[in-house]
Structures are given as structure tokens and as C-alpha cells.
Image (cartoon, rainbow, N blue to C red; front, side):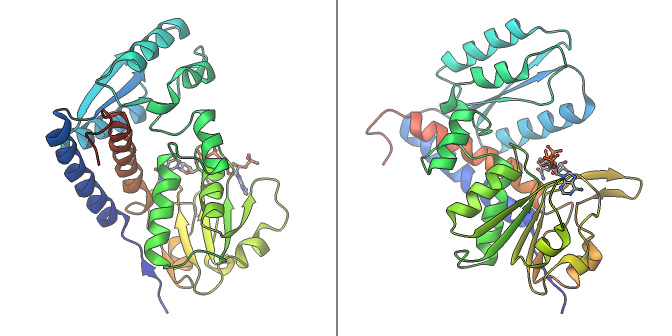
Length: 288
Ligand code: NDP
């Protein structure tokens, strides 16, 4: 039986429309729209594309997009001063520093300098700690999008066995925390995991966030499992995920395609986080 293809593009469009309605309501109540600042240092072409599409999506949702482009030679102190100014600016609800930063910049210091309550990327250790301890905060956009897609497929996630392949701070670890919060039984696998095949094969939910094209094949997948492919790999045959889509789709119950699966959810969740930030920041009593 062929798997259901999870349409992340359509889901993301619905979320973006929902955010746009929320922005309109906030503007009506408070007289101002949320503001998202994106900082880009240098000329990395892929980063420039991401920043452009984030700006476009922000404006389409009715929010203010503020882009700060700095030359590649910008030093850490200049960047820290910019972050401090954005932290202090009441018109800015979200701050995002596009990664990777040039090698000479102290990226950790820059990320630490962002006000955790404006950290809509959810990368600040305070937000990682909030997620780990079940406190409200900002959740990294890609895993947040994945859990939304999973909730659409599974009315009840509690008790399901989940394997997250990858343990990065921006995808694998927060994904594992979110699944744990949904009461899944979570295994986090990585490059040193022994017998990865057997672990993936036992899972009801597989989240692949590795960065190796087509690594997880259909014969690894438990029949009927849900497969979320976070991977975005540019190959000679185009954009592919970490899962071998054709063989996995023949076995899985539901699967995300690449492109058109997790990717579109990431920007939609960024907009959603920015709206949440603006709502939290609104004067007490104005927002129900
Ligand atoms: P990282 O390179 O930071 O992490 C990759 C992880 O995969 C590491 O934990 C690594 O293990 C693990 N890994 C590497 N090789 C193997 C292996 N052979 N077996 C098992 N585990 C392995 O990548 P990211 O988390 O940043 O991204 C992962 C993928 O997701 C990439 O393709 C990226 O492009 C994509 N991505 C997509 C997004 C979207 O919007 N859809 C957003 C962000 C990322 P170890 O820790 O031991 O080294």
C-alpha cells in the first residue's frame, strides 16, 4: 500500500493564512503590526536566498520586515551592538541572525546576546532550557513544523516509538524534546549509533535530520510508519531528502516529500513565533 504524502506546502499555507489573520487582529487591537528583524552578514548566496524569502513571507503575513545587511568583514563587536539596538527597539518582536556567520565572528556570543524573548528562532540556550523543562518559550521552527505535521497524521502521539536521526541543536535535539513532550518514547540516533537500521526499523515515527542524501531506505522502515524527512540536500538530480523517497513511500503509512514537506513549514513557524512574540509584548489588557 502506498503511503499518504504529507503536503507540507498546503499545511504551511494554512498556517500562514492563520498568522495573517492573527496579525490583522493584533493590528486592530493595538494599532501596530509585529516586526521581524533579519540580520545577514556577508554575501553567502544560499543565505541571501533564505533572507529574501523570509522577508517576503513576513510582508505577506502583514508584518514589518526589517533587513540588516552587513559586509562580510563586520566584526563581532559591531554585530553585538546591532543586536543590542534591536533588543531595545519596541517595534521589533523577533530577531534572527542568519547562519552561518563568517568564521571570524564569535557566533555563540552573537546568539547569546539576542533577548531570549525576541529569539523567534529558538536557538538561545534559555529557550532550549525552557523547551527541555516544559516552560513556555520559542521552539526552533523546523522541529515545530515537524510536530505540527505529525499531529495532523496522528490524533494521538502518546506512547508511539519515535526515532530521531540527528542530534543537532537546531533540529535533532529540539525535535526529540518535542516528541518527548508529546509522550512518545524517543530514541535519538547519531553518527556513533550502533545498528541504526534496527532502531529505525522499530519506530512508529522516523524523523531524519542527517544531511546525507537518501540514507534511510524503504527496507529500514517499519510498514505503516510515519516518516518525516528534514534533509535538504542539493544533488545533481536536484533537491533530495535524507530518506530514499521512492522505496520508503512504498512501505510507510505517511511520508513528507522533499521539496514540499518540512521546508515550507519552517518559514510558516517563524511567522507564527513572531506573532506569538508580538502578542506577549502587547500591553496588558489589550489582548484577550
Ligand atoms: P547537522 O550536520 O548539524 O547534524 C547532522 C546530524 O546527523 C548529526 O547529529 C550527526 O551525528 C548525524 N549523522 C551524520 N551522519 C550520520 C550517520 N551516518 N548516521 C547517523 N547519524 C548521522 O545537520 P542539521 O541538523 O543542521 O540538518 C540536518 C539536515 O536537515 C540537513 O540536510 C539540513 O540541510 C536539513 N535542514 C532542513 C531544514 C528545513 O527547513 N527543512 C532546516 C534545517 C536543516 P553526530 O552528532 O554524531 O555528528
